[in-house]
Amino acid sequence: MSVALPRHVAIIMDGNGRWAKQHKVAVALGHRQGVETLREIIRTASNMGIQVLSLYAFSTENWRRSPTEVAALMALILEFFRSEIDELDREGVRIRILGDKAGLPPAQRNSVTDAEQRTRSNQGMQLNIALNYGGRGELVRATRALAEKAVNGDISPQAIGEQDLRDHLYTAGQPDVDLLIRTSGELRISNFLLFQSAYAELIFVDMLWPDFSVADFKRCLDTYAARSRRFGGRTE
Ligand code: IPE
Ligand code: IPE
Ligand code: MG
Image 1 (cartoon, rainbow, N blue to C red):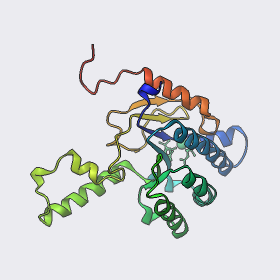
Image 2: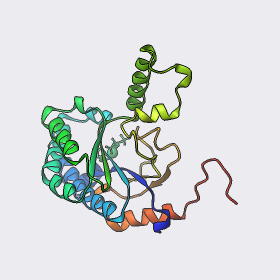
Image 3: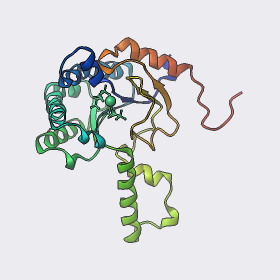
Image 4: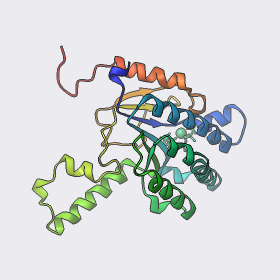
């Protein structure tokens, strides 16, 4: 299995709301239970030697939810970084936030920025946490940056290539997504890592995120290892 270990695994952690409904508890409790899953998956991925793990925690569209739910999610973000940062740092995990940090409340913004700063020279797994992230917005941001460079004469429009675009994404310097997992049974991408997942293998798991276990994660890696990736070519 290790032969075909994906370099970059991205996960759309979905189903906390339905889990809460099933258990007849408040949605905030579903999200709290989801954080437990996330802790275990981060630890497992780091121990297995996965290079990059990207987790979709809050999309730019998630602001549409009720103020109560948004507040609960924001509180969990603070709690997560406060309780996990020491261990993550010890494990050598390097944290990067994907998304518009400026649009987060000040406490969350400071907490995630501190986590990035503190772990920036770590040499272990790259952990991307997508917060206030949208794939289209990311591409617009990159386009704007390139347009500014062109206007300033720093780059000629004809010379702009894929690499320039990559260099202006939140994931600059990181490999493309090899494996994209979504839990909860929904069959969509929901604006996650659009450019980076162009050739990702997709796995949709019919399980709610709080129920997703380390064994389920390892099964996904096995499924990935058995896939044949052609990238448009032909392998006979
Ligand atoms: C995913 O769980 C977590 C976030 C979007 C933050 P949901 O809250 O979307 O769970 P469902 O889709 O309602 O079950
Ligand atoms: C995607 O899940 C966003 C995160 C997991 C953070 P959603 O639950 O927001 O996506 P939709 O609305 O079902 O597409
Ligand atoms: Mg959902």
